[in-house]
Image 1 (tube, rainbow, N blue to C red):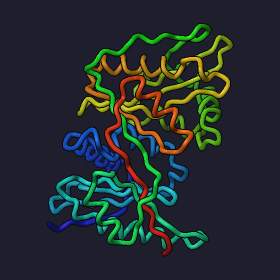
Image 2 (tube, rainbow, N blue to C red):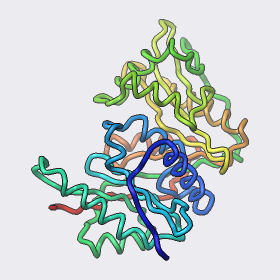
Image 3 (cartoon, helix red, strand yellow):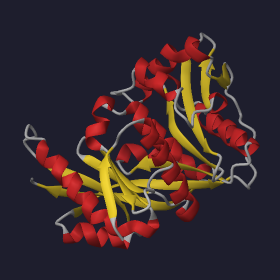
Length: 301
């Protein structure tokens, strides 16, 4: 089937990309490479938003419908493809590898592509093109929201509430930078987050200490088409950890998603040693691992 491709051209394309992500979720969820909220988060927190039109490429079928796109960032790339159009992936990889060759300042050129362990088509394709699978992966865990969610036990001395608009932006960014130090979050990026299409103020939760400090935070996203929630991000300042704030925030968020009649909620977390507490934390809240997305690397130009 004939397809054509071109570079990303702005907001109309972004709306098409979000629609495609929702279509893929409807067909394959929850084990998808990206959820609608993830896409909004990527765009708002990208290190070089102005370069997106030169890096994102879109593929269309003969009727003009979007069937896939690449989202490169630094040395890695996400490939989002409609399941009926997997045959475009070699062309997508051609584009990804072309971008890596343009980075002449990199002394150790390489490109990293994400692929689920169960995605035999992509895994075989990557192996044939000289990629090797690393041991670095992202875990996808899912929580069924048809099951009961406990009432949050809020630690003494804290309150959980939603963001109070611009009044809380600086404190929220400071908390993010503390929780994920070193962090690329800025005031401008967080302001972009609150204007993202999938952002809902009532799902952007913070735990506030008695002195007014934003001690922890949990932003949840909701896809009303598929009735799916996502957690991205969840964090806690170093000085306020091990007090139950993250647990209370997630439980409050899950209950709010149930109010939207969400079917389930997803979260991604890493495979590094420092990510292991997250694995146990989410498991304790009823999340079940559904898949692992591995980084495949190809070195050289």
